Image (tube, rainbow, N blue to C red; front, top):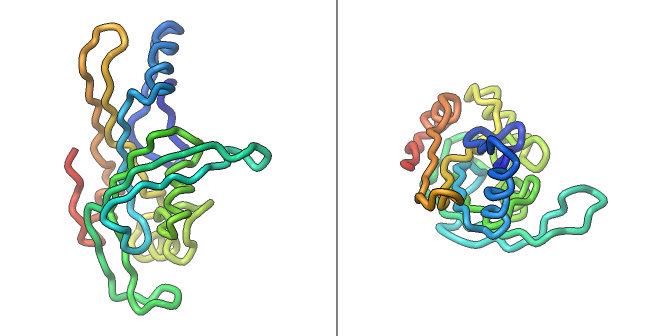
Length: 183
């Protein structure tokens, strides 16, 4: 594998067929020559756009590593349901573009902004996760690797790989009245 995902994240996984290809694709990722886009539903109303430049610890014993993520809010929703101290529940559909590829980077970064990804059992909000699981029928992490773009290391072709949202993610968006992101 040259592009892996956390177990709970859906979307694009990229495999090389031989060691030479794996090394070439690995170099593309290391040189940040691959554009990666994810879609996520987060708690609260995320700012319209921004950059999260916050180190991420890849294990409890490792030193924090530099990590950068660009984000863009695509839509917001508000439900008339009291969760925690608030009279209504607010959510954002976001596009996340990690420039680095640290373990749980997007999950850490959204948590760092106080907008955790819905369904995230490690860094998320258990009350909102419960609401999605029990009331909306969605018990998954709402994080999806939807787009990879790169220049093929052997042919020079400009490649774009896209993966549509899975049915359960799409269903959660419908329940919130949020649009399905395009591309």
